[in-house]
Amino acid sequence: MAKGKKKDKESASLPAEQERLGRKEYDEELKRLHVELVKLQQWVVAKGLKICVVFEGRDGAGKGGTIKALTERVSPRVFRVVALPAPSDREKTQMYGQRYLAHLPAAGEVVIFDRSWYNRAGVERVMGFCSEEQAQRFLNIVPLFEKMMIESGIILIKYWLEVSAEEQERRLADRIHDGRKIWKLSPMDLKSFTRWDDYTRARDEMFAATDTSWAPWYVARSEEKRRVRLNIISHLLQHVPYGDITQAEKIKLPKRKVGQYQTAPYPFRMVDERF
Image (cartoon, rainbow, N blue to C red; front, side, top):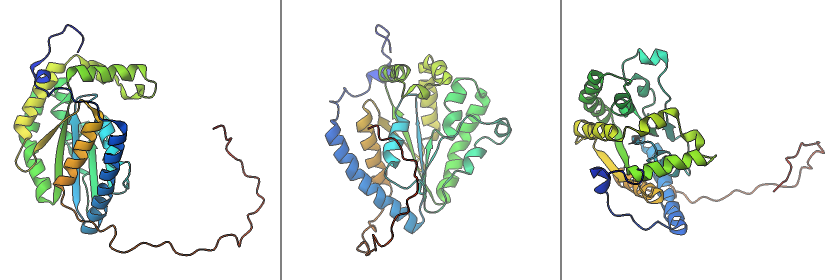
């Protein structure tokens, strides 16, 4: 939020700014959590669990960075990230949500949605890509859809990353000036930027309609990226019971033969060693 603008009541209710978590402390804790995620991964595969994790939040809330921290040390064949683009012309004619069904987890999979079917409750509703009637119909139906998921054996966990207007503006501005991040800033982000209150209202109505006992929303304060990543990974590990089967058998490297074959004098094209 620019200087001099009135601070919205939502941002004012956020806890006081915490001291920034140091890199060393963050790295140590993240390493510990990554070990636990590997244990969870092996358990999911062994027991045939089906886990679906939904990440939602405003532009710049930190969804991508949190998902990266969550998945960087596990197998992409077990932990699948789904980030669907805008629907195609064909998908627009389908039942809403149909394109998400094919991505739901089978046994032994953890599927992470970087935005999900809740697009209809957020960006589509706010930016006019669906009618108000369609948005209301979605809010009425989605709890039943999620109950069907739960009853089929899917463990569904939904996260909303909450960021203040000030921090969102800082992050979006940073994308403009950092060549590594400019790809993250889409024309839709810029259009959405002016609709803070509309998104807040849409979020509140989404919570009221879809925060159910079988598929509750978990809100994570995302003012500080390192903290929210650790908090969400810790929370996920607490909400999926798992055991440690990674050391069920002691692993020992077998003996091997090295040096009995002479490498052929092939003219390899070597990469220049500039560094």
